[in-house]
Length: 226
Length: 226
Picture 1 (cartoon, chains in turn brown, cyan):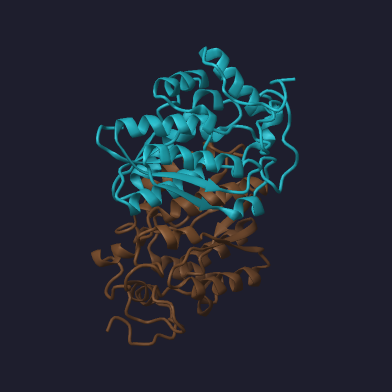
Picture 2: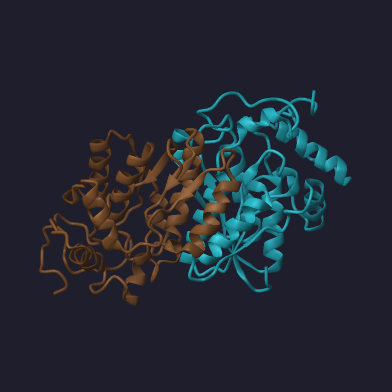
């Protein structure tokens, strides 16, 4: 992103997009933190974190409701789907939690909102660790999607994907350096009042803190990975 | 589209997408006609046409509500926007009626629904006459968007754009040959009980019938183009 650019940042309230928000706010003007309520089991846990992080930075926050996803899409991440599998984030069982083309939908809506607000850039936090099971986190998707958004908007809106070559532990380190309060981020796919410690996203979150050498401030309901 | 493919067809209830629906139904199995209610001034006129056309063909029809577009997007096509300009469809004044990245949003959502239903293809009716003012109707957008959808879905969903090199009058001829009842299609951006005859889309619609040498069955409130 060029310095001074006005951007819309996709912010779920998870660890990755929270770091992306803080980094974008340091580099330029974030005109909007954009979240989606699409009926996942953990939306009601992560969206308050997204709002909190935006408020900390003085960034306007908008939640867009996408009720049709829970109604029409097939995914165990959704309230309409089956149970969240336990295990490692990269396990094939986690594939059942993929919401088909979710990043495409979120980026497309963000492009329309950015064009409506005269912003020049979008930021998405997809990172290297996501690639194994999520086709819409890979550069083979993000590259053409970015080109479609550039060509399909009058402003030629740019899609910034600062972490696409990074691992999650690097995001923890970047966030630590930026002073991110990780207690106000949510990863667990189960939802609930505490991180479960058993689903793939809890395992991945905890591992990232370990690998980054940063103390994990998360309170887990069970010892991670048990 | 390969013969026998299962497709989801974007159907607004306008002339172009109605012809695309009938053509796709002839070539393969249309598992869903997909429409969007996004708060345009003419949604309530065109969506019943979309439903009628699907019913004629025995194709399931689904309307997805995108209320956030009317709330958050800037366009005179929307109920939240200014008046629809009179004049020719290609006039620069019509640019105010563009809904930013609308085709990107609709294709992205369609991709998620298609993946959830094990369909292999999407069909969009964007045609050559749209290109002048709509960046998201051009092949420079559609090509990368199609690649993003192919790469971002497990099924490698294909985006078919059969009319991207055609003019609207050719669609009228194709529709005529397929026996499309054009009385059950809606173009006018104004909405209301009859086509206004004055907005760019009415002018373009009538011209297409004239150029195709097909009688225009549309009842206009005013002589077209006056």
